[in-house]
Length: 559
Image (cartoon, rainbow, N blue to C red; front, side, top):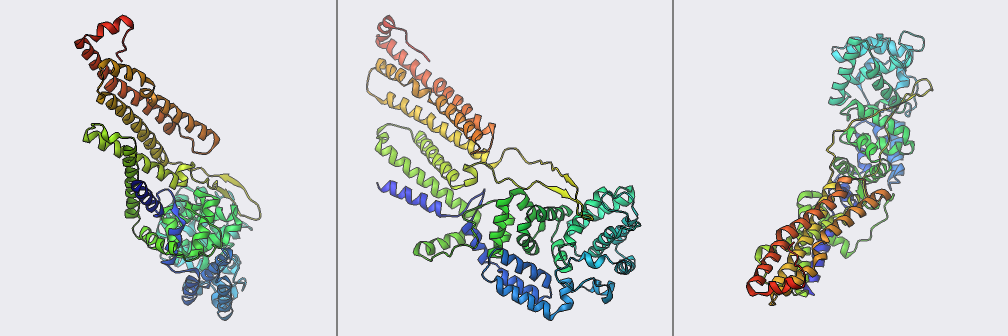
């Protein structure tokens, strides 16, 4: 009884450690948020640094996730914009804009106006081009040269009467480069695309970037746009953000606020596109708890295990909750060590369960070798550990991860839209963690069947009875020695049925591995153990004179 209680205590302790490799526990996500600045702190930091555009995004994001300080944040931002109308226009101060724009070129005083509106007037474009033509930045000059290309398909040429959107977008891209407001990776990609377009005359690839930039510039002011573009490590990230804002408009405040504070824009857009609506909810939950929570979620790129209701229900501080807090902090600070402790607790708990089972079944009375006993206990403990891991990991036990958003190109030019599907090739290794766990589980299950068969043979061998009776008992256990096949077929059938029903992800490799291990198990049991044991018994019977009598009645099986 004490062994069972100790095993349950160890399993319960391992279960309480919020450490998983296919998902991030919600308690760890909340704890990570406590270790970093919250939304209100980030908003006030942005205002102190003269970035009201970013503060405005954070206030909108706070309202979208029903943050307790949302009203206070909105009032603070509105008050700042009222007292600083010059910064309200652009969303941030920038010396390059001061040199390039004269006050009469400002199209609107609305702080929510997209920056592209300021770049569209003819006087503003002439002033910007004159300013940028004097730049010594080679990439800026290459971008300006793309205005002369005639191969644009969605934009009208710059020289035409309706070429203002294209020219304004090119000037905006050049200004981002001139003011160093693009991430290093995105800058390199943009430079390569512009150089290829100028050298080949084909602007198709560069046009996609201009379309994405135009779409974002219609929504964001300069301070907001530059805060996001500076965090982009690829031009594709900007396209993915544009796509998400169009397919999930209700999540725009959350996505834009997250994009303004995320370490890498690519991590944010990749996560939401890959995980779909569930990923969107996870990002909103992480944003509610602050930058530390969002950074952890995007760094791990896995779904969240737990309740993502917003706003979160208040948690009553109890003795149990207070006892779990140090465990959560340990799992956050040392994730690898925490997972190792979790596995160790499961293994020790499983070992205690099997020790109790040995005592209850009187197996300890058999003369078993130390090696056999050690292997049997290890296999049993590992099987229990695998079962607990599967049940503790929802995205291992119940199939694949959430489906994401299909990436499309939507052209936002002159009120019309054209759609083209973008396909991405994947070089990922086809065997994922869930497959490895499934194969390992079937292997350990067949190993347990194998050990049970050996144990039955040793039990028969240890009996103080004549060889003839031992032979009869061995023949009587024929179904047990074939049980590996039954278990293997049952495992394959169950896996295939669950795959058809959609409970688990379709994976024939994992399903048929159960059958394969069953065949190997029976082959090893019968060829390696049962046949030599029967042969030994027949020889003993021949020496004692019992064989002739037995042959007169019926033939004896030898394998």
